[in-house]
Image (cartoon, rainbow, N blue to C red; front, side, top):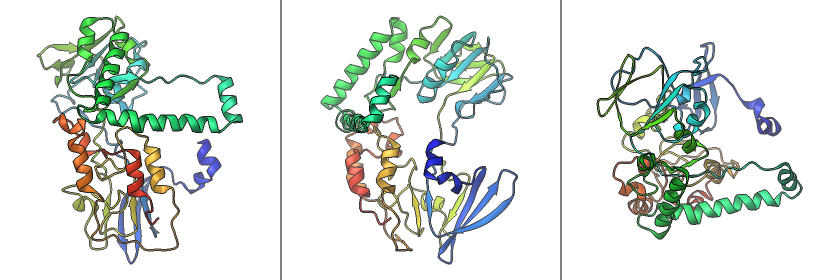
Length: 384
């Protein structure tokens, strides 16, 4: 809020307003809007820069009985704050990024907590220490210090973490040794430890950087069930071994549908073709930014192979690569006939990466497998 107010962008925002469609007509975009009261209107724009991300459409487990459960249930992305978890027997389905954040926040409130884990994730220490007042004061006096810290993190991610996703590389073996050592140090129960160590390469699935999740798992009233959920019943959950457990509340920490990015809106180009139709077989764009057949439509933030997000980086860094230049005097950009930049090169890198070698993961459809510097090379000089 502070940044938006200081930058002045807050006065340009239309809150509680949904874009339901956009059509290119007579060299301009006609955008259909619906406000919170249900009122519809249209506005015209020269350009559309879409920042629509992929983590907004909650995914639920594909098992029978979700509607049969008679207790309270909700997705972590749509947390029901009206549900009091105090003294309740709670189940969490899922064990990845959403779960490792939610579990430590609720474990002291509930009577019991059961986490259903289908597949374990590699985990590492988040090392998210709080800065002292003295350190903060020093960084204000010497702004170069936080810049150098950011540079250190960038270089570590680019030249240490990213190479760890090269299948059978030295850095990958080193990363596995570090992750296993972290788990063995934090988890003393051999049975629990065996449930938490994956049998696949580091990077095949999302690596989780955690704070106190492992401490939560070792509390007496917390249980980790390393079985998939077979069905939800009116009283609880049945796992893959046909063992049933009763619960008062079920929380779905099952992530998102990253490719449902156009489920709530229709973008139509000058020829009448929609963006959904254009991307039916594969999501592609020119230099990760512009889409053939959709003039003056630019994008960032999509979870797609053609996008500028790497598996090891900060999304803000990627957006800065693209938006670090201002729109120039030219007022019409049409990239018809141009598509994804460097498809063969980047696809080749996927076959060397751990997320392709797994055979069962979807990361190769969602993440650019290159480093930050390659992304910068692809997007620099873009005519924005």
